[in-house]
Amino acid sequence: MGNNVKIYPFRLGSAIADKSLLTYRLGMGSKVEMAFGCFYVEADGKKIMVDTGPSSPEHAIKFHKEVGPQIGPEEQSYIQLEKVAGVKPEEIDLILLTHLHWDHAYHLEKFPNAEIYVSKRELEFALNPLPPFFFSYENWQVGLEPFFIPAIPRMIQIDMTTTRITKHVSMIPAPGHCPGHMAIVVETDKGPYVLAGDAIIGQENMQPLPERRCPFRMTGLYMDFEAQWNTMETIMRIVGWDRSKVLGDHDQTVLAKHVLPD
Ligand SMILES: [Zn+2]
Image 1: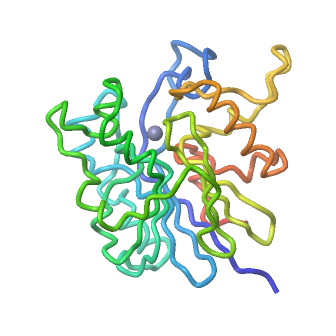
Image 2: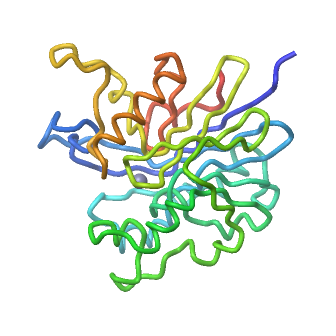
């Protein structure tokens, strides 16, 4: 008898970025395609979204054009939920947010019956970010209204500590990309998977770099280098260095899968 935990990746469009954002100081000047994405998890009788993806294509093009967002009209988390998993947005019980960047936590109002888990630290920073992150959080300082404000009454603000959500699902601190970033550990019949948000950008981050004696490749999207490095190491330990069990929100390979474990 298995635990019947299932993870559905949703691909929600793509963006173009300099490769050094994927791998720190490697590939500068060359471009890579990254996906946008999020995940739906069924575990312990609960219907759970892990992140809710980016905004509409029109909004993304207007306010985040520097990443060249290409988001199809159907590539929205609440639409993919029905199409891929056959679940209506109002059936979602829980939303677990890795962080509050615009490409991970949009459309919270489409899931009206969900309790939303986010770290208190992330909400604090999102409301008052350092200037380079005003657009990431759509702050008032750049003439926008933070998209997550109406959902604050539904948010359960947790500390940066391991927090069990259901029997097989936990949130763990994973700072570095931003101060309050968390990751989600999902225990399946085939071992633990880590839904890493932006703590891992792509599979290449988990390749060793032997000539530099590095066990994996640092991402270029960090605020705190040391915290980010330690987070990556923690994640790799949890999955026993099995890269296929680390699921990042921007990873094309992962988001092309239908359901995990496969
Ligand atoms: Zn992010």
